Length: 342
Image (cartoon, rainbow, N blue to C red):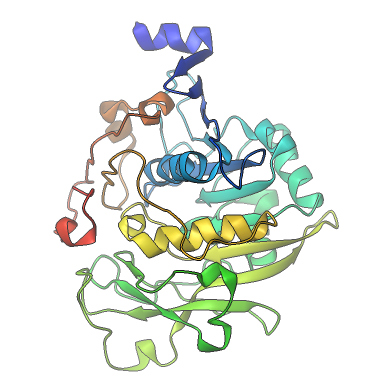
């Protein structure tokens, strides 16, 4: 009854955040990003972007001054977050005044009317960040997004899924790139993706070394999987179908559990600065605003989300939903991943 009332009201103020029925806005505090608007679009069934992007929105808004709007795939009737609903991604009109778009979707097919805002954003040549499954973020008329806007599409898992992790290795020839400021130790429990379509015009920042296990202390494996190592993070110049020319940053990291790693968060925050025309800090503050309890990645059936019963406002400032790992998740060393992880 209470949540139905909030949906009917449409707007609620909570701890400095504006909460709408289907999106979440963190107002930017003082900082270099003050006056700039970042729209973060979640919507994947596997890597818990609905947990990762609110955390990033809090860091960007409270630590750096960017106003951040987070969008979610939701159940159209009840309003709870439902990543398995590939067709309902409300709130894209927020892109009208956005300075940067961060995408962490997987095979979405929103209504064409809603995606007009997405197309207009790209045709204006505005900057884009893609995380993990954004390389295959959309189907249908927007399936071009990964390859054309980010520089890569879905290819394959290069490491062993849920058994081998990924260690970031700096590309030496681009080690002085500002997006790498303060980035030293990157580890992601999600495996390395195959990346085969980048060209000489792309700037590779990190490569991904396949590690022996999901333990952040595990070593890269010997053998052909790491010779050569796949690109893990890069800059790309894009041209949209409508003729817009812009810049993007993409990393095949981005599972919620990946972003427990401080430098995995830092490279994304650095890319936000760089793509919005700001000087990148020498070592950006990426400390969690609220404790971060990421769920392990993995597919779930639709009833899981109804039973979990989480809504956009459950990620408001001051709130931290607890991790709920999908059935059959492997054990992984939470305590080694950071002081505020589970």
